[in-house]
Image (cartoon, rainbow, N blue to C red; front, side):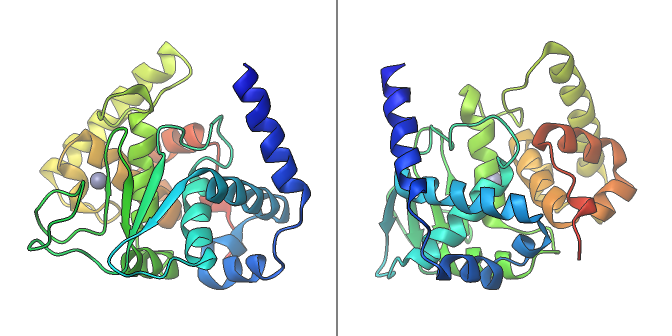
Length: 248
Ligand SMILES: [Zn+2]
């Protein structure tokens, strides 16, 4: 309780100072989705991104020069997911490692598994690792259903209840039952068939399905709403956002 009081006080003090004036321009230039939000949402997202930047431990890797502009881009994309839901800034994510480029299978890095090319990695109670070239590319193309920050932070939401099962903490038993029914139906469909809305990687397992569906929800909302209306409705209720109504 006392800790929460200190935390809230620290956040208020931080926000009492104005953000550097160029930060809003950076958001507009670097994140096309930012222009689609309402003015109130833009202010709120900037405030949340500032707190996120301040409270996470950031570590540049492989010689990357980790600037405020890079941190702001990652923070704002991460905070978009929690803009309208109850949250504590992904409290189980303490650190963010940022690599300059996509990691290939021959690389060996702390906390990262060997494997195929890696744009980002989220692990339970571990850091989130991101490749800046993939983050920047994903952000600049806001309509292709591919965004590594949305993807990894959807995993972080999933991990909040200590299990990687594609189901983040939900408010009620009824919501949970509905979530499992809708997610399972669509996951099974994706495993059987290709889908023009969701990337096939979502068929890997239920955790990846939620992460891939989150990317599509924010980046291809109108086609998801048209082709997968039940899934769209479920995610709209969860995130309490309706990106299909965003202005172009
Ligand atoms: Zn994933």
